[in-house]
Length: 217
Ligand code: SAH
Image (cartoon, rainbow, N blue to C red; front, side, top):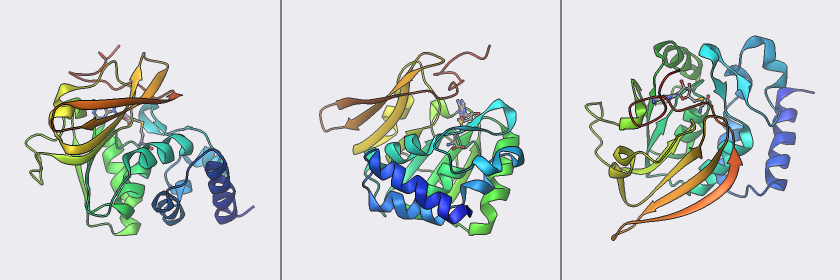
């Protein structure tokens, strides 16, 4: 089956699993996942599963990506912070919907590869940083202090205070929290008086390593 047809089959599967946000579907239609995976697993690009990328990391499972994006209720004017650029796949999906995506990755080589893969889409609204994303977007260009939405694509031991501080009032953070192998998605909304929180599905991300994440082992 052609990749386009496989992509439509995957989108039907995501719909059956409860994804309804039309912006999310149109983002998935605009970006070719087969470009973001290692060549030996390219034929599996539209399976609903995580796949290996360089540096022992993974490109996240399409359902979890779609769910995180849907939970964030993305809007065209949003300025979004993404922690864990990885292959750049989710970065590109976000960039088709929102006004600005600031993305942080701890591996220089992954950021460079992601930039190359994404180049063909000519996005002007993605800003990259190599470093520890658990501390958020500090001393970086553009100098955004607070984000409408923050999305963490690696499993955290707890919710980083630094990230909560960089969320606007009314803003949303989605983050997998748990142990190194298994987590549960948490959706946190910053309110005038504090935070409201809800739990979503179980998931399994690579660990978030850094000062406010896991120690490197
Ligand atoms: N959304 C990406 C997911 C990549 S996996 C994709 O679909 O391709 C998660 C990524 O988070 C890995 O590339 C890992 O290197 C990165 N990561 C882990 N801890 C990090 C940290 N503290 N700061 C930035 N990136 C981190």
